[in-house]
Amino acid sequence: MKSSEVKLGGNESKLTREIPRRHRKHRHAKSHKKKHSSGLEVSTDRFRRTATVLRCSGLLQITTSISQLLHENEKLQSEIDKLKYETKEHSIQLQRQLQKNLEAERESNGTCSQEGQKLLTKLSQFKWN
Image (cartoon, rainbow, N blue to C red; front, side, top):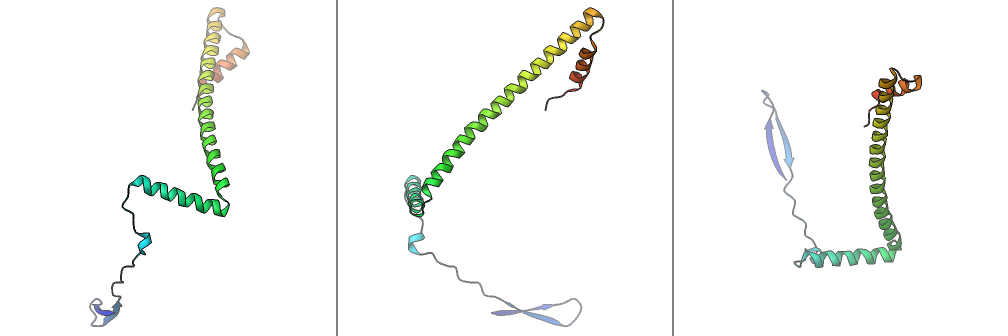
C-alpha cells in the first residue's frame, strides 16, 4: 500500500490515508474463453447445453409448456385487441346512426320524444378513448 498526504484547509495538520494498489485482473479458465466459430454454432451449442441441463433437472417439459402458453397468450391478446377495435368502431357507427335518426325525428316533428332528447344529450357528451 502507498500512502498519500492531503492538506486540510488553512490548517497545517495533515491527513494520511493509504491508497490500495491496483488489484490484478482475474483470469478465466481456458474452457470459458470465447469460441471463434460462427454465431450459429455457438448458439446451437448453447441451446443443446441448456436443453440438457433442463432435461436432467426435470424442467424441460415445464419450460416447453410455458413457451407454448406464452405463444398462445400472444395470439389471444392480438385477437382481443382486434375485437376491442372492431367493437369500438361498431359502437361509434351505431352512436352516429342513432344520433342522426334522433336529429331527423326532431327536424321532421319539430321535437323528439323525451327519451330521444335524453339520448341526444348523452350522445353529445359521450367521448371514446
